[in-house]
Image 1 (cartoon, rainbow, N blue to C red):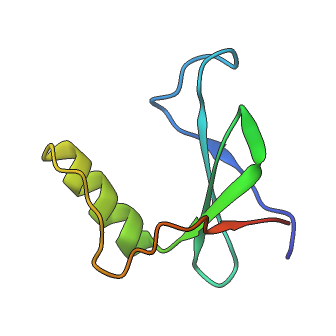
Image 2: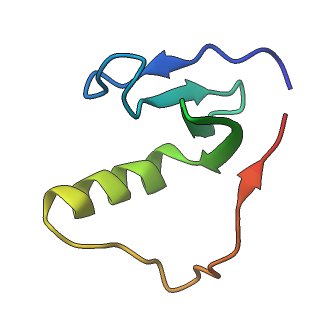
Length: 76
């Protein structure tokens, strides 16, 4: 996988707080990681991330029917 360009969320605080980072891959998928566990990377799509954000804003805890509960982390 090519080198990713990570962008810190504008809602994250300084480096001592929990910061969320997002990167787009050449194939259009997204990668998410936190600063306290940078080697644990979650892969998702823009549509799924959008669904999660809309659900959280609406006060719902989304869990898609196909969720398995296992760790979907990818390691580079």
